[in-house]
Length: 112
Figure 1 (spheres, rainbow, N blue to C red):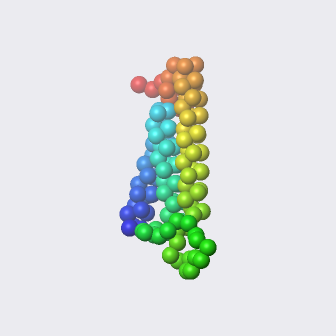
Figure 2 (figure 1 turned 45 degrees about the horizontal axis):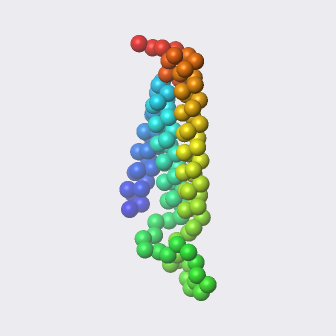
Figure 3 (figure 1 turned 30 degrees about the vertical axis):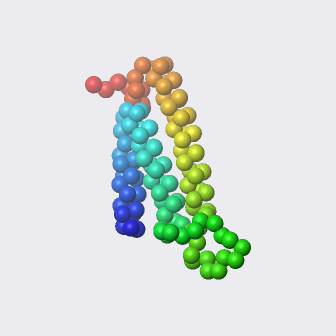
């Protein structure tokens, strides 16, 4: 399972970097979104992959090995909210820039 998760993080990261380096603004937005997904998966993977573990500690916990770590889960939720807000802000800025310049290239030059 760890190999699949590592491969998914690698594919998302490389695809995101490749799209960020593209000249069109929509491709840059999709690339940043893929990079945020890769970071989210990376943060989630730091907590360890446990299947069937209880997420919340009880008063008599026993061994902590049987429980999932809640910190990466909270960080993932925070990262999702921040990436959504960043994507919304980026869309507004790019739509305003397209309205002013008339092209959707990152550098403002229209290449045919």
